[in-house]
Length: 241
Image (cartoon, rainbow, N blue to C red; front, side):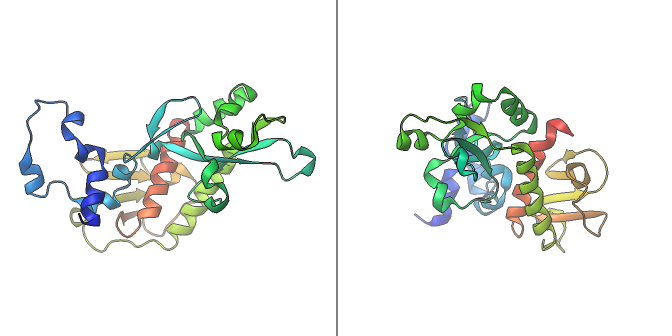
């Protein structure tokens, strides 16, 4: 089986379409035969990639992986607090997974939700501590808290990477009909979907995001990381903008 076929079969909609399509259960083989499902475009589509797996948040409910913030934990830099643990966000591999790969956990990628969990403090913070740490260390004696400024750190890491990638993005000379991607603007609602076009007002996300054009079309294929980060950051901010 080719690598492309394996990737194609990973998507839950394609593994068992009848489970997801709420209509008469008739197998529409013509959708496959006519290339309606393009495995290459799904590989690059951040909306499809967000659905290929699920992760449990600290409260035990599973959500699509694209709706989650990756977490880890470590002792604070101040040695006087060496028995404590800070829960920290990993945005776009901002922390090396060489050290933290086996201590990861997740929480919902939503600013309002994150701030509510932080407000509740110690009542819930322990539930977001990666289980591997507990397994490795046994009973923990110190405090387990979200790192200071956790929500601001999430925003900062999203924005730094988006600004960096916007500066080197590859715009498309072809029409939108020939490519799938995001349309970035500087006015209008935060996000608007017109048919298959996703239009995002980048200025609603951050005043620091900018480009020369009034409107910029970013194809998924050439700008996969950038498109993912913009969509994830939009999800993070959507209830607070």
